[in-house]
Length: 101
Image 1 (tube, rainbow, N blue to C red):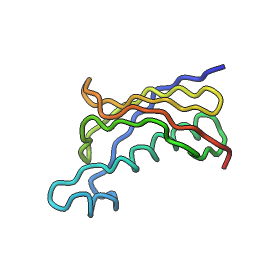
Image 2: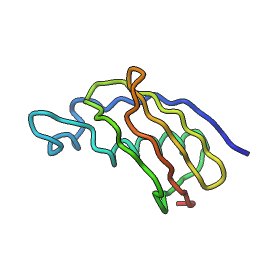
Image 3: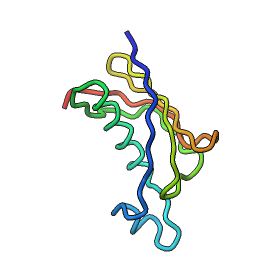
Image 4: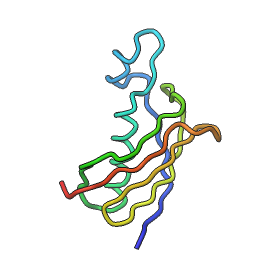
């Protein structure tokens, strides 16, 4: 059985990961976006999840600090697929394989 959810994310301007990515023209790091999506999946399922493999992820466009984005997540067994968008434009998509943390 699969679970689908829509989540909203926004990386605040003061997030510590932005200081080095990139000074003067910050962009949300891909690993931060993946972490935010994983946190949303954990909150939805009520269980701790740990990515054990990332068979496919594409970062299509940058997400800037303060820009709101929404993601469509589908969790089916140990597979999490997602598509992240801002203003109707794709930011990232991919699949994470999950294990219990």
